[in-house]
Image 1: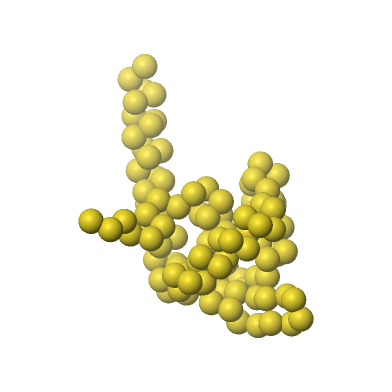
Image 2: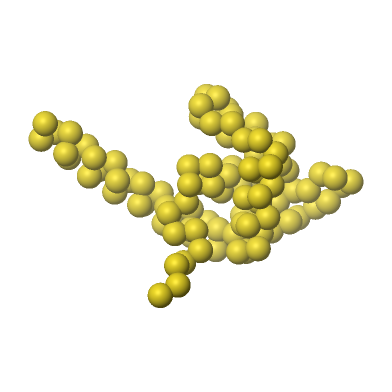
Length: 105
């Protein structure tokens, strides 16, 4: 049986999708958003970021909205938004399971 694309996003992938929820952004803006949101706990290098953006675009999770020289701007698609919400629910379930086990210790 084939594995579904992006079944269980990495933390970095999750934050990249999150960056597009409320605004269209270019790569630099995505990096700034993630550094701010995670209080510098998570930083992305250009290789990691642009690999993720290319995969997300290939899977139609984001789409390019503008190109100005080397600057490319993207927005999340409905498919991307749905995947983000699925992952958010999965992570919530993980936290609930972990907290219930902690309570038993």
